[in-house]
Amino acid sequence: MDKRRREFETGRTCARAALGRLGRPSAPLLPGRHGEPRWPEGIVGSITHTRGYRGVGVSEAAHAAAIGIDAEPNQPVPGPLLHWVATPDERAEVDALLRASPGVRFDRLLLCAKEAVFKSWFTLTTRRLGFEDVAIELEPAPGSGTFTARLEDAHDRRARLRGRWLLAEGLLITAVVIAVEPSPPSAERLSSRALRH
Ligand SMILES: CC(C)(COP(=O)(O)OP(=O)(O)OC[C@H]1O[C@@H](n2cnc3c(N)ncnc32)[C@H](O)[C@@H]1OP(=O)(O)O)[C@@H](O)C(=O)NCCC(=O)NCCS
Image 1 (cartoon, rainbow, N blue to C red):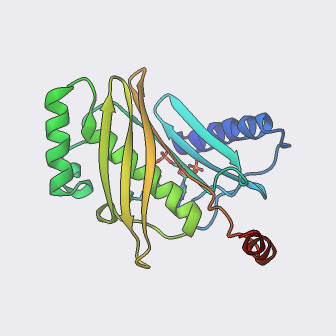
Image 2 (tube, helix red, strand yellow):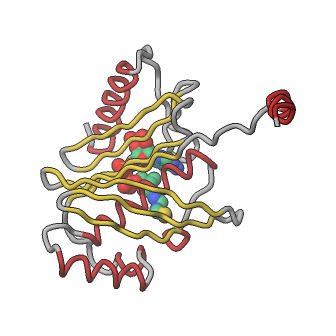
Image 3 (spheres, protein in one colour):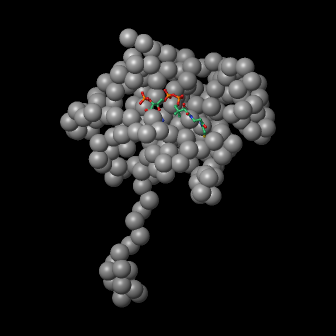
């Protein structure tokens, strides 16, 4: 079996196990037109694979609007790719973080964070972000941390997303969960509130 087919199938095995933990029956998880996984009605989720690792995050759609996860080896971003992925400000931030904590490949973490943001935003909007559309601020702590992503998409929609990251067993793992927007109060509730005031 070739590598791509293996990672697709083992990723799907993890995804079905994750659905089982939510009490959902096994279901075919076909890819959408843009490669995104198509989850059963009422479920949001995300899949990642890298050498020796498969990861899946799933949630009931009532609890999360979108999820994006990504895993990368804790190794330098190859060649000149960082110049393509990161803005000058992000590169300066990465350089400073690498000097302070050389055990964490913050250059690779930046890429990993952008991929998680990409997947969550695509799930929410079906719009693709470019690397330049997202500015990441990494907030490190030993072996794990958080990050903030400020983004603007092709429809001029802006957002500030929060994510988490972890370094474990040589892998960097990032996750972004976009919260469900609270629904506006119904007209009925508004008028009863107005009556009480
Ligand atoms: C699609 C992409 C996000 C996948 O990330 P990756 O690090 O290369 O690979 P991963 O193994 O982590 O993820 C692959 C999984 O992502 C999921 N995926 C693919 N396209 C997706 C999309 N449009 N939206 C959400 N998830 C998607 C799939 O589940 C896929 O696994 P599967 O094919 O087995 O189902 C990446 O290849 C890509 O095209 N990125 C766009 C480039 C970019 O601009 N990124 C950042 C901008 S902020």
